[in-house]
Length: 370
Ligand SMILES: NC(=O)c1ccc[n+]([C@@H]2O[C@H](COP(=O)([O-])OP(=O)(O)OC[C@H]3O[C@@H](n4cnc5c(N)ncnc54)[C@H](OP(=O)(O)O)[C@@H]3O)[C@@H](O)[C@H]2O)c1
Image (cartoon, rainbow, N blue to C red; front, top):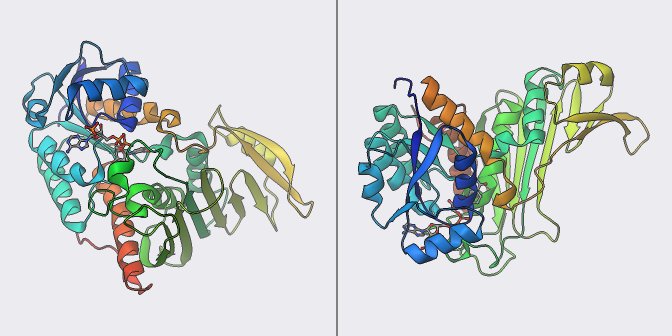
């Protein structure tokens, strides 16, 4: 698809908690303007968006999603509805030649993933999937550290999404249900699976998982642990749970043959990491590096930056996400977080849920042959 000049019109479907954060990012981008919002009930939609911090006064409202698809002044559709509606809406948006910001999970089963892939491939529109942690300074630093070789060859990676989600969550009515929320991985832990792939640079080739349930109110198991084979030789784990008595925690661990990163600390064994050299190489002004000590007293490096420490969508770095999508549309290039890449994350989640349902029997990846 060719480059686009001028302002890009945005249509939003799904008018809740996360949508308001998308709208603030859209408002702050100099090349986008919100044109239409689509919801089920106007007063409730406007009230919710305003309550979560978005200004939608003067923006047209419709109950018909088709109005967004048919609107000539809409170039991008933001899909922020409950999980089971994403695929249908994304396929229709692509068919209407609209670029797409798609909330996770992209699809909730293999059939939906294939439909999204085929529709976007056919339409050749730009897409970005809301694995927003790619724009968090700490997760982005972890990705850079591994990619630029500071950790060496990755041997093990563990990512954890631990968050108590109860009926205080605005989306509680649909997330707890199997038909619309679907599973802990699809509703939440897919962020950890995605970060494992992105930060380690390795694709899971096989997964074995176990799940259990403690927290009441959900129609699906509330904790799942995945063991994955990563690439040819490495291994990894993901833990995704709402059951643990602790604040929201997004755990990041990457162990290479040179050094290891365990949350905010860097460790080594044989060859010391040079703090001076790492500071010089660090391309991120919002990441500071400090001398530290490990529990046994040996030297370490502490990473100081905005950590992925909140489950609140109002604190998520959606600006980076919308800015990347807009740049890609304007410059006629693919985003790094498109539906094709996200499909691989979703396949791991679906394979893990399948394995857990069969008491840990390993499931090979990919589920979908290209
Ligand atoms: N990337 C992230 O970090 C992140 C963070 C949070 C959420 N999310 C994702 O964002 C999506 C929305 O979650 P949320 O937390 O914003 O939930 P939410 O507050 O419940 O918002 C969902 C919105 O969708 C609307 N909706 C429900 N059924 C609909 C239908 N049949 N047709 C049209 N609209 C419908 C709801 O409208 P009513 O007001 O009429 O009920 C509500 O406004 C989910 O897929 C979730 O996984 C992502």
